[in-house]
Amino acid sequence: MSLGKAGVHARRQTLGRPQTAPGDDGVRVVTTTHAMQTPVLVLNASYEPINICGARRALVLVLKGVARTEEEQGTELHSARVRISLPSVIRLLEYRRIPHQTRALSRKNILLRDRNTCQYCGVVLPSAELTLDHVVPRSRGGASTWENLVAACHSCNRRKGNHLLHELEHMKLQREPRPFTLHTSRHIMRMIGHSDLKWRKYLYY
Image 1 (cartoon, helix red, strand yellow):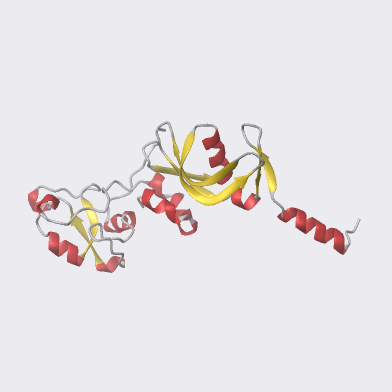
Image 2 (tube, helix red, strand yellow):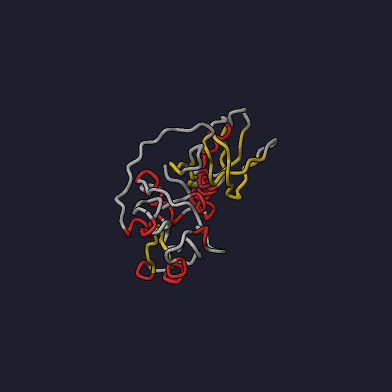
């Protein structure tokens, strides 16, 4: 049976209307399909990023007491009795052991982990304009490891020279250097261009 113009118009309005989803306490939460599909960053109990899930799944984990919201999207779900903010970042309350495979230690991967950002002054530069710095200089026993290599601009690298950080005033690392793991980067990096800016401080990629 063919739908008339009025029938098609009514169907389109229905598809665009908010839907209701039952919460764990039986409350009917008013939401939209699009909002509940928004990506959410999942952190381990140690604050290490380990996954990405949809907002619906993240909300279920929070309501069940499995995770807590660390950052909010700014979108709220409403019902007659409750108002719930959709999470942007959640953290598991119990630590989950995740197998990791560390990437090869290379200049490219160090710059990728540090987001092409000088780890001393915070300036973002093209790869060709960045150097690698040994936090503990090689001449003072520093090794070429993930924990001792960081991206640095030429100015900061010259300023630091052969010194240890505690020997220099007003010079410190933006963040602690860590190994760059495939688990952290593989699927999280696929989403980074579409992610909430609140994710940035949790990511090492």
